[in-house]
Amino acid sequence: MTDTLPDRLSTNPKSPHYDEELLRRGIGIRFKGVEKNNVDEYCISEGWIKVSVANSLDRHGNPMTIKLKGAVEAYFRDPEPEPEAAPE
Image (cartoon, rainbow, N blue to C red):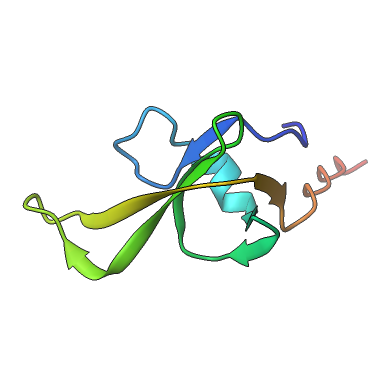
């Protein structure tokens, strides 16, 4: 695995932009210079994030989201784990 993040990533398993391995490492998002913890999806090149709206649900039972536009910076919160050495 590399230390580069994809341009677009989602936390929804139904999305084609979902990547469980990357999400397990811990992704941090800065939006307009402010740390965000409630981001459901982001796109760096288009400059937007989707965040959940309180406890509101859509007609399918999924959390409602809104799209916010601005500068997006994504980074890994945890460093890449070291590969375990084989026993000699």
